[in-house]
Image 1: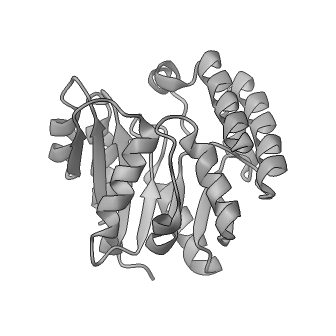
Image 2: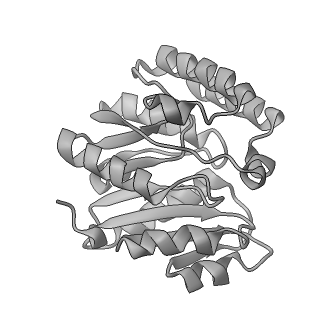
Amino acid sequence: MLAAPSVWIVIPALNEARTIGEVVAPLRAHGWRVLVIDDGSHDTTAAAAQAGGAVVLRHAINLGQGAGLRTGFAFVRAQPEARIVVTYDADGQHQPESVATLLGALEQSGADVALGSRFLDPAASREIPTSRRALLRLATLFTRATTGLRLTDAHNGLRALTVEAATRLRLTHNRMAHASEILSEIARLGLRYVEAPVTIRYTDYSMAKGQRPLDAIAILWDIFTAGLR
């Protein structure tokens, strides 16, 4: 059984003062460590995250979610007790119960990485907006073709990695393409991976923040360019 303090949850955040406190607090209630990367916010994101119980690092300017994860991974690697690092979104889409599912899958399988999937649980997949579902299916097929990973979901921000695996990832993309780059790195390094069912809660707030059609097209473009690399 993983000791809760050995798990660090890394949350890049940009102008998420409205949600970050409510995101951090239940994770801390489970005993997990939480690290928020305030990626150049102009609001009170940092203060709200600290009030919720997170450790906060700040980027002076906005660098992007990929850069936030790199900063977070580097910090967690330096913590002697850290064994697992979990990537998590700041807008309230993810649930603490999904973290527990990922940790269980990682421990039971002995894998290096546990990837969240919205499509393993039929009830969870029904929550995906129709416009998003088709694009995710296409992204998954492309990821399978370019990486050889037999995935059911792509660009899911919920992941759990051993610190050793996170240390080996060579991440260069600062923004959206980091998600496909992580998958490419898993394939390149031959890391053992397992998928686990997770639920994504789509709200008006999260949809406005990053679930618009143009954003989804940008994600597909990033998958394409990362595949060319």
